[in-house]
Picture 1 (cartoon, rainbow, N blue to C red):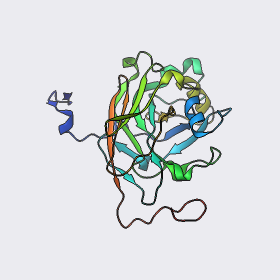
Picture 2: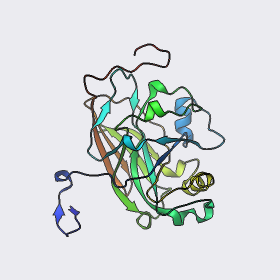
Picture 3: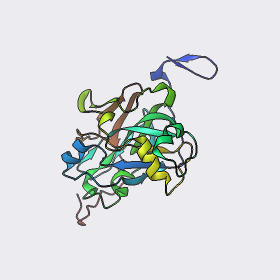
Picture 4: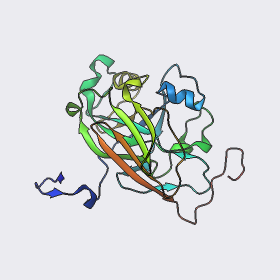
Length: 241
């Protein structure tokens, strides 16, 4: 049961979830698990490969993900989301835990058709509206004893498709906060998406994705076609797909 501010109990399936946080910005990390890099045929980068996830892509638990018309390969990515608790600028890794407010589950959806290498920021691949489900909860940092020993799982229509553990991250939260806060202020409420392990696969309209991280709950979103008036995707080569 969920308890609201007035102390009343509600069944989770009878409420409409909102985003667990309204971030000023969402900074996503690519290629932060070695097994996923091998899965995609990429080498592990020498420094963090980052991109911004548009706030217009964010979607709460239970919201419907829109599948772009013409896309050939769209997939989920289960990721630990780090929520900044207070403004951070030029913070050293050894001090960074004090700037973490909590954790949530993120689904960094992507149209793989538009990703050729990590030198091109994948805005068109990952920036679609509804491509950033977050939730269902914001779990405070003191409720997560070890954020780097959490199991991650992704199910599609009840079938386990992806499984990993946050202990296999190449760069962890404190290192990322030090790197990022060196050149930009991380503000309270900002979210860092920390990458995904191997196990990505295609999803299609009609599928239901369920992403789980130990201690953080389960983020579930169905997939449906975008509106019929949407033009099909155009591939990088200029041909319709």
